[in-house]
Length: 294
Image (cartoon, rainbow, N blue to C red):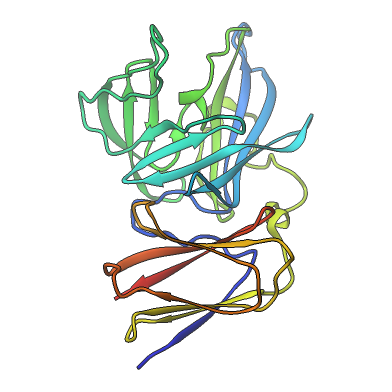
């Protein structure tokens, strides 16, 4: 009989549940804003989107999305989640999520991005597919769509990460994605639309400080031979803690509310083999960890 014990930290990010997940913590996109009236390249501003930590919305697990600008600093702008090569986005005050990307498309597919009647950008058609070599030597699929743009698989739109669900700017400026980084490594850069180092823009402090904590407060024991999951709460506040189990498709399979120290046992004998995410959340924090049931 084998028992595996792991410590769960606030700084622990969700691990990929399958090979289709593209984005994790320490992922960032940098956009330059360009003056379309200038005959030479004139950068009028910069912004950077980045991912830090997880959140639970309507029992679905999302990655929290932030934006940094020199004028406003760091501010939350919503959250994203992935399933089957599709990326969904939900804004801060949105009632429901929207499809941001579908990297599984093939030539001729229609992509239903928006539901606004009469929106010319609502249902773009895939007009071409090829591939590019990224800065770190990877081959990535490039998807051309009918509103004169392209997506790079696992990176995003050439006009910026949130461009597919953003209003079109008509005040004489447009945005261009100039840098995409993961875990500090430059995966993609576009020097045509920036001066010097496209990837040097960003805040002085590490994004990791947003989720930093000094000590673990939970332990998870996954016992496959007895089909049992045990979670031990080492420290807890006066508020209720929700413990949820989510399968690899994003479906909620278990949900418990606790308010005490000690061990909580979950019977996992009825669950199919595969990857699951344990989500422990309060009003202020969300922690996640991957387990494998065999």
